[in-house]
Image 1: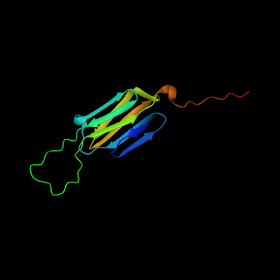
Image 2: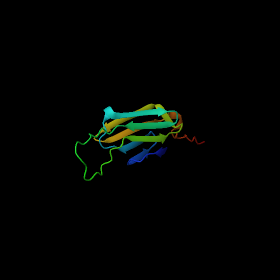
Image 3: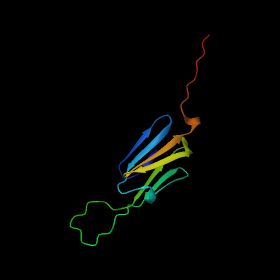
Image 4: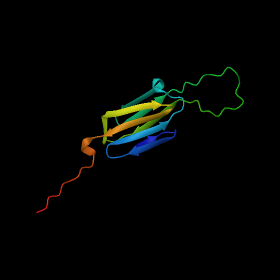
Length: 110
């Protein structure tokens, strides 16, 4: 899985799944859009930070919207994708196709 992503994120892989966790402060399920287009997982989100009526003296909080793209390969089962948003952390779980999982070969002795 290759990515174009500027936010903090972790990618965890095991035999059953790929799990992508992104830190996205200010994001909830209502302002999050996740889709797969061919070989690209696309994550868009609106931060929804309120406009200030006064004047900023210091401004360090990034108010840009999120856009992330991750290239996925043919091991990912496009029908087994789940996403959860909780307190600014988004976790996307991508299942691995059965045919691509490692399989133990039984050895028969004589």
